Amino acid sequence: MNPLHSLRLSSLVLAAVVVMPLAALAQSGAILHAPEAQKLLPDAVYYAGKSANTQLRNSAGIHYSDNYYVLAVLVDTSGYSSAVQEKYQGYLLTEVPLDFAGHQLVPGAYGVGFVGDHFGVMDIGNHDLLQAPAIRDDKMPRPLPLQIGDGASPGSYRLCFGRSCVDFRRQ
Image (cartoon, rainbow, N blue to C red; front, top):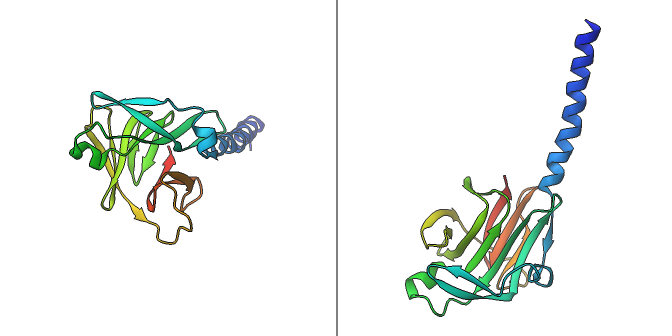
């Protein structure tokens, strides 16, 4: 084998070995519980033409190792119509693209909620963006109003409102 060709091949292999762990590292994150997440969230959020107070005690998030965040918080929807209240229960802020059951979500701020056996994501104008299948976790020992935990597969997370959950992962 040509020494120059061998050197190029060695360089490519070395680059792959270095880059792959960095990509995996960026995917890993620390789960934030309410005391940590509420320090990053606002007291009120804008959605569908109104301002809604956040329930900071019912918040959670993920802090990725590359310093990006995904944050979720329940909101007080008392000023909204019953049609909006039914599907808008929380606010999701993400600085990274996410995948919900094959549906991609770009970074941004969204209204979210569980309706029946689906998790819905709406833009801040209350337009439906995606629906993903929800999972009911009857084995959860102590369901909280909102929590984030590890998902079913490595690198995935589970967002739960009570026992209604959806798995997601960073893209």
